[in-house]
Every structure is written in structure tokens, then in C-alpha cells.
Image (cartoon, rainbow, N blue to C red; front, top):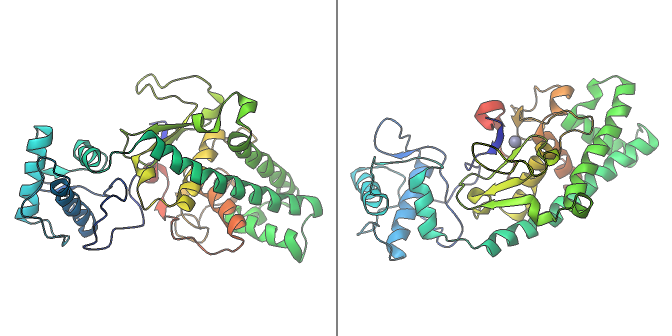
Length: 335
Ligand SMILES: [Zn+2]
């Protein structure tokens, strides 16, 4: 319950009929197959049909022959292929493939054996982008802290960005100025994790636990940064780590997207400089349905708001990047 989870489902989907061979682990949003659990959304069905065909291509046992049509329709042939794969590879068969469960893990194990080096390489690509985004966010905050609100110039641009992503303009003037300083200190903490890990007797890569048995994108504990050396008694996962799952290493997670995910997780991980924990009240760009209704107090404690503000400062334009996903917060969006 306490873990904040970024699920494996996402905004990018495989194009119909295009094989994703060798392009990273697969993930589905909803169950595929037969029975009451199955939702058989066409994009998910295509992902599974393509993956099962690739089992045959990889010369592993349990793949379909002849190949399945990658048409997004879960008919008798697709259902039979799912059951056969489960029978051969898992010795159990319920005929349904659920997100983040055994069958999809087995498919990924067969199709995309990922080495620790592959995993680390992806983190290494993303970290410099994270560092630049944090620097850009701090630079913007500094501009408006130094000169106060201004009508034009960098301070005005920065104030607009703070209003868009955190709704600082909803606060009283004196609260706005203390909040800007506090935000600066919060991003400074992000920066400490990424840039100066030796301060905390850690190395940057050690902060990330690369969990190949976890098909989700990422998970972390709120304020885990301050729970050094502690473990979750149930899962034995370290609390003072950001755990990246297989979903993080899927091909659709580009370095920019990976950096955005890390920014989001960092905010949970370090919390606000005033000690408040950072939650998931909503996901998406500042003007999207799950963010727009959030007031300043919620946005200041909302992980995606920290990631989107830094993202806009980095890109130097208010346009939503394609990898930002619109989702509800709370249990539906993350745990
Ligand atoms: Zn989150």
C-alpha cells in the first residue's frame, strides 16, 4: 500500500502489425485472453499476438505455428495460442494474460533478456537529462526569487511557469515568496540525490534498484531517502531506493521519458523541503483534466507537478511532451 507505483501501461502503443522484435520488454494495460477478467483491448491484443509470434521466431517452446494474425482481435486462434504458451512454459493455464503477472513476465524473459549493463545504460542516458531539468527548474526559481515578480523578462517567465504548474498565484503574496524559496530547496534535494550522492555516502547508480522481476515502470517509498538502510518487511525491498522495473526499460520509454519518470519518483523519494510528503493527486500536463482542478496546496504535494514544471523549464516552452500521461491520482493512478 505504501509503495508508490508507476504502472507499466502507457501512452505509446505499438503500431498495428509492426513487430517490436528486439525493442524492449512488452507491457499491456488490461488482461488479454478468455474469461471474465479479459478486456481484450485491441492494442493489448496486438502486443500479445506479436509477442507470441516472436516466441516462435526465438525458437522457444510454446509459440504459435502458423503465426497469429496481428489484428488486435482475440479470437479462437489467439486464445488457443495463449493457453498453449501457458501450458508449455508455465505448466498452469487459465487462458488469460494479466498485466504485471506471471505470463507476461515469462514472455519478457524469453523475448527480451535484459542485462544489468543494458539497464544501467538506460539510467545513465536519463540522468544527465534529469540533472539539466533540475538545473533549469532551479534557475527559473532563482530568477523570480532574486528580482521578485516582474512584468517581463526571465522572472516573469518563471512566475508564469510556477503559476501554471503549482498555481502559486492562488496564494497570498508573502506565501508565494516563501513557497518559491521552499520549492528551490526541494529541487536542491533532487539535485543532491542526482549530482552529489557522495554527500550521502551513496553513488548515483546505487540509488536505483534495477528489478528485472518487476514489470512495472518504477516504484518508491515516500521520503524513502531518509530511511537509510531500511527494508520493507513484506517485500524486502529497500526503502532508500528508487526501484525501476522492466517497464522502465521498454522501448517506448525514451531517455526524455525516462528522465521525466525519474523526476516524478525523486519527488516522492525526497519529499518537500518543508517535510511534507509528495503524493499522486493527479497525472498529466498542467491544463489536463486530472491536474487542472488541483489547488496550490495539492500541486505542491503532487509528484507530476514537480516533473512537469522542471520539464517546461528544461524545454523552455509550455507545450506538453508526448510522454506525459493523463491519469487520475490516488489508487487508480499510483499506490
Ligand atoms: Zn507517483
